[in-house]
Image 1 (cartoon, rainbow, N blue to C red):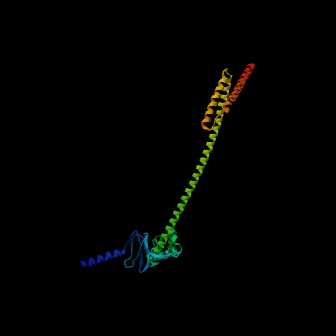
Image 2: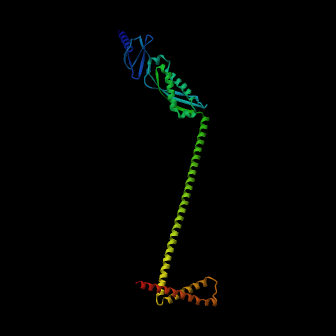
Image 3: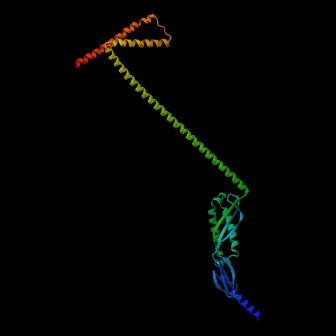
Amino acid sequence: MLATITFVFLALLFIVLKLVLVVQMKEICVIERLGKFRAVLPPGLHFLIPFVDRVAYRHETREQVLDIPAQSCISRDNVQISVDGLVYIQVMDGERASYGIEDYRRASINLAQTTMRSEIGKLNLGQTFSERDTLNETIVREIDKASDPWGIKVLRYEVRNITPSVNVIHTLEKQMEAERQKRAEITLAEAEKESTINLSEGERQEAINLSEGDKQKQINEAHGRAQEIVILTQASAEGINLIAKAAALPSGDQAIKMRLLEQFISQTGNILNTADVSIVPSEVAKLEGFFQGMEKVTQTIQGTKSLKQSMEIHTI
């Protein structure tokens, strides 16, 4: 009796489990009835007919990441490189994902590899590095177009690594070293050019400054000489006036004679000290004529002064 009750209880429990289906939020279930497609059940609580309906497929509705293994590709400039990546897909139609393709994950990986190989062959080696974003967009577009009958959506594709062969890497390193050396030489040449230009500009400015200085110096010297001439002329005029005034005095002519005699003797002494000159008696005798001439000059100056005074008195 107890065994019968236990059997009935287990049978009822089995039927209930087959009757009730709880679909999780992250998945969908494809239901078949008697071997034929019946429905795609969304997340939630569902009831099935035991032994008639069954869950044929369960699909993940979240975004899935598939690792694309590295594969050898040939670029347009015949360089062999190894490329791997990641493809992101999402199941959009459970029926087509179940019956449209045997394994949509493996099919997506193979399709990504072939598409990537085809697109790499259209680019040069340098473009595979510089145009990676364009390459990703092209691969996504081609995979999504081909995988539409499978009920999946290709969200994006990312090229992970692009690895040239060892020989290509050595060649690229030599090329980059040559480029760096070339840029260094260009920079050094530009620096030397700038230095030469700056040096020539400095020399030019220095020459201009020296020329301006010489010009200003000559101008200043000319002004100085002009002022000197003016001062000497004024001093000479004042001296002549003083001599004329002195000659007008009663003993002025005698003072002038004495002054001229002192200057003559002084100059004669200087000549005797600096030159090989001998004074003979005949030359000494000529001194009398010199003093007589000076006396006439003094008398002339005195007469001129007297005439000037008489004219002033007459005018008054």
